[in-house]
Image 1 (cartoon, helix red, strand yellow):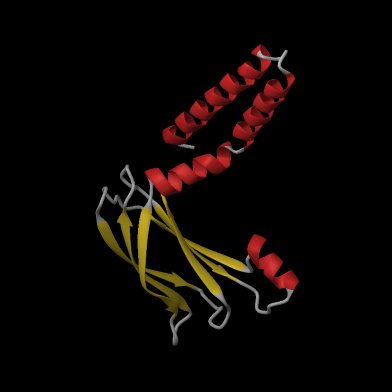
Image 2 (cartoon, rainbow, N blue to C red):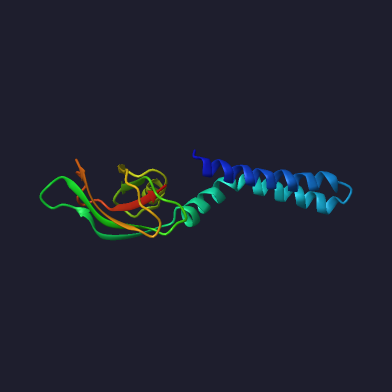
Length: 159
């Protein structure tokens, strides 16, 4: 957890304390106090989702252009050819490219398993600095990829 996440969490926690204290101060007004208590706990328990949203959509926002992302035909390798553009408010130092392999079949259990637990995941760490409003081209080859016909999903996250 970096300093930005800590500052965001502390600011959300201060808002939680403020709203909770309002509920304690106005305990005689039952409806308003209950609303403040409910709102304070919603604020507290929504903080991980809010932090993730702020980090991915505001601070470290990226635009990805995939030119090719598929298994190679004659080698057990997966190729990801892409551009990453930093649209956020801070420089990006690292990116993680993840290829999730899903189970074949469209029945309910396979779809449920694929959502929470893919059959196999391949990750590749990119340690290159991408400044604000700059674009970098990456060509990534993931070896030992034996799932040529399986459905897959490529995702990228930068921080």
